[in-house]
Length: 350
Ligand code: ATP
Image 1 (cartoon, rainbow, N blue to C red):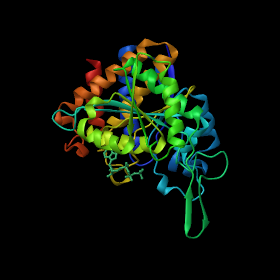
Image 2: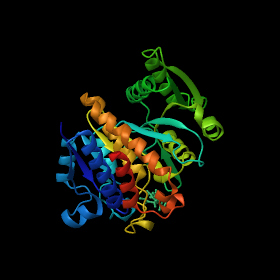
Image 3: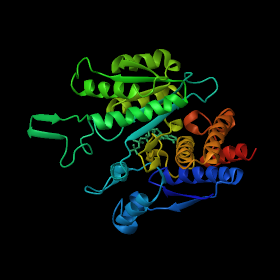
C-alpha cells in the first residue's frame, strides 16, 4: 500500500504546523503500514519569492494531480494586489463543494460537550469572489449603492445534502438543515426543498429544520443534541466558528474540503502571523484535518487501514490533550508545536 500526499506548507505558522502534522502522519504510517510519502509543493509567499506567483502554474498542476492534499494556512493579506488566493483557487479548480467541519470537545473540564459536524456548501452563496462564472457577485452601480447577489442552485444544494446524509447514516442518524427560509423564501426555500428531496433517499436518517438565528442560540444552549448540520456557505462559515469556539477554540478546529475526486485538509484558523516562527503554534487543527483526509481517502479507496490510522490519530490527539503539560500557549500551557507533535506520535507508537 502506498499513498503520496501533496503538502502546501503555507505562510505564517503554516510551515511549523505542517512539520508537526507530517511527523504525526509518519508515525501513523509506521504503525499501520500505510506507505505514506509527502510531496512538498510551493505556495504562498515562498512561491512568490521563488517563482513570482503565490500559486504558480506548476503548483496548480501538481495539486490537480494529487488525490490527497494538505494545505496549511495562508497569509493572503500580505499578497501584493493581483496575486491569487491559493485557497480559493484550489477550492474552485478541484470543485471542492463540501466544507466539512467537525467540532468535538476534547479538553477535559473545558468547553461544552459536543460532537457534531457541519457540512457547509462551499461553492456558491454570498461569496462574491468565487460564486460567479464570470465577474463578481458584488458590485456598486453608484458610489453610494452596493449590491451583493447570493447564488443558490438545486444541484449544489443536493450534493452537499447528500454528503451530509451519508455522514449522518454513519453517525447518529440526525441531519439538521439550517436556513432562513422564512425571509429568504426563494433562495433558502430552494435549498430546503433540495435537502428534503435528498432526505427521501435516507429513510433511516431523521431531518430537522432550524432557522439560522435560532441555531446560533441553540448551539450555545445545547450543542450536544446536534449530529450533522447542513447549511449554505455563509451560515456554515459563521456557525462553524461558533461551534469551534464552544469546543475549545480555533487551534483545535479541523476541516476537510472535499469534492468527488479530491480532498484537501485545511485548518479552520488562519496563518497567525502574530506568533509565526516562535514554535508555539497549536498544530492540533491541522493534525486533525489530516486525519479527516486519511478517513476520506480510506473510504474512497476501500482501504480500511487508512480509516484505522485516522481514528488512531484522533484518539492520540485527545490523549495528548488530556495532559495539560502538552498544551501550547493558546490553551494556557507552555508546550511547543514540536513537543505536542512528539506527544501525539508517542501515543500512536503505543
Ligand atoms: P490570517 O490573516 O491568516 O487570517 P489572523 O491572525 O487574522 O490570520 P487567525 O490566524 O485565525 O487569524 O488567528 C486569530 C488569532 O488566533 C491570532 O491571535 C492567532 O495567533 C491565534 N491562532 C490561530 N491559530 C492558532 C494556532 N494554531 N495556534 C495558536 N494560536 C492560533
